[in-house]
Image 1 (cartoon, each protein chain N blue to C red):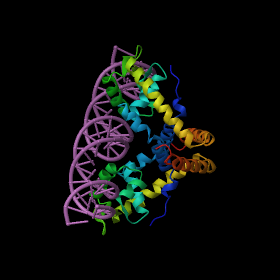
Image 2: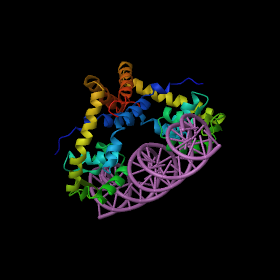
Image 3: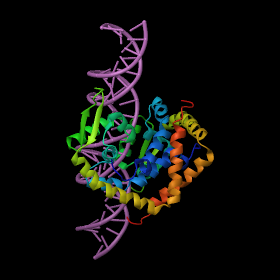
Image 4: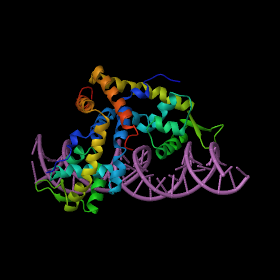
Length: 148
Length: 148
DNA sequence: ACATATCATTTAACATGTTAAGTATGCCTC
DNA sequence: GAGGCATACTTAACATGTTAAATGATATGT
């Protein structure tokens, strides 16, 4: 009935579908551990760094600040993370995993890794590497300040 | 502090970041027309087909059924869409754009197309085509029933 | 026809996404 | 050192994401 760009050639739609396909098995796995996808992202980032302030954590885990606020409240209540005041800037919260947080990371990590391996088994390593490269380049290109 | 897969090599994370980058300018544009990203997806799909039932609409616009239910209620209240009963199956709703729906599609469409052109200007057509191809292949590969 | 399973959609409940506004702290300059 | 601006969150309000369960209609087997 209409022209315009076919939805199959819409980059955001293809990215969305691809992500859904890639995540499909992750969510049930995480749910079986009582975690959401986003909570796991936060735990995973904190597991890789010892300590991080909330702003950086939001960027690294690709969450907006209001979402992160709620997720941290949740994780703190469950004793997976701890927040300390920054010594030199009272505005900042410094987050880290508790022992319990490190423990669940150790439990969920292998399940997560296994699912990544499944993906790699279904799609050639070469194509996957090309895809990584292109997505990285796209991220850089689109974040260029031209025409902003 | 820990090993495991670097978050920069996580396919779902790269796809999420790429999508965020690609969508960044779309949301403010759509908002200026009073639409959300998801509402626009529904309108756009309906504009391309005359008529579609809700299940197909959900698949095509990459929305889960409960989300689509709410979005359709919203769009119906604003008189952008109309729902009719399916003649042969009372369970189905058949959706279509109203005149007002077609009108907003005609208004927003060009703005949307302009933003796609911006993306294409920042990333070579060749790379974009490779990316489309790889994403399509990934979608197919990941939806294979092996190991399900 | 009847029981049963399946399908299409909706509702419910809770978590997150998104934008705007609020609060508190730090920085900077006059 | 008071005002003004920026930064680091937090809150609020509404929309969507996600899973489970409910509802109603249809297909299927006996």
